[in-house]
Length: 372
Length: 188
Image (cartoon, rainbow over all chains, first blue to last red):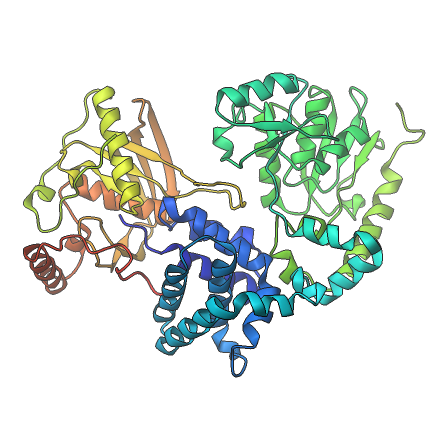
């Protein structure tokens, strides 16, 4: 069977799911990507992530070439334009191919008029794009393609460091591994990677972390299925050592899914913990179960609302509680650029309220004094 | 590794019944590897041995699985089914199908929505898979090939004849393979 969709068609559909319907990219993209020809999946992915990452900047550049803004029902055409401009400015596709292929999307949308429009605007972008981008980039929020409210808050919080923070938010995330150092020394696992043809460097601050030179499928990682390593950002690898569970401790992981930190806690203790992994979503808890199985560990999995311990907790208090509470996720924008569009300023106080409720609800479950 | 030629409808060799593979040996593995290379080069997601004029029950497929993160440079999920057998099927779903042996044509075809399939992998180990979605459709499409059936057989005589005549004309004019870029795909 031939692949039923072209990479640009799949990317456009995924962008619409995010920008029009408010779906997260991690929900929207996989089913679409499965339909793309295998060797074009990288392109479809690059188009989605890149267009979302730079969307506000792209829209600002495009605005001056449209006589009037596109109608609401033509969001698909607007998305195609942004995606085409991203490809022109950021990818090394030959310009004529990017223009022609993007314009052709108009036909698939059933909007023949859009073919000419996309063609015209993108040809203009070819000639005037760089100059126009320089004008747009004078506004720092547009330069970093961040919503105004977020840029304002970042600037207030980081001052002179704002520029560096924004650049980091738009950088490509590295693929970082956590080596299960209870089972294999970091250096030995690095050798295993090298044997598999994968170059990796230790992380400057996190002693369990190896940063891969190039991202790969997890199936290519030696011993992944047996729990020798996990995919986990370096910062996330700091939680388990901070909690520093003594052997046999009663531990609560209160917002456990997908279970990266749950697995880390158990890996560190060689599995010797009485651990309860709680999450409000039973479906997401399945991911925790998969992670536990990979590591060969056991834990009590509970689907419940962490803020209502009366509905799920009885017995003695916990020696340790990890509360990885729901957050704005603005710190992981580089990995999930769709957050730039899905997050609203009003979410911040709402999330802070939820975090406060969780903290107050779980605090009484912590045993004192804390045993070392 | 080598690129193989893909037979085109209405070539009568597409109607041959494929034989089961008695032993998965190096020759079969070489065939599997060549079929993958051919499938990837043709922007395919599935290919049956019959399509490359080898009348054995071998199918290769790549329908991506989980994993949406911006990490997989290639994102390959190769799967190989030797002597595939559909054990159970349920539900009904209609999707637009095309075929590397019927280039340029896409028509709606009804298939079972979920299936359970048994087959041997590239190392000759038996496995079972229960699946739905595009993967289930693709497996049914490729298993059809092993039985000498094409997706056009699920269409009306009128449609099938029209496709046959157009392809015969193209083949006479020697422009057998329309480029992948020019072909009509599903509407967004």
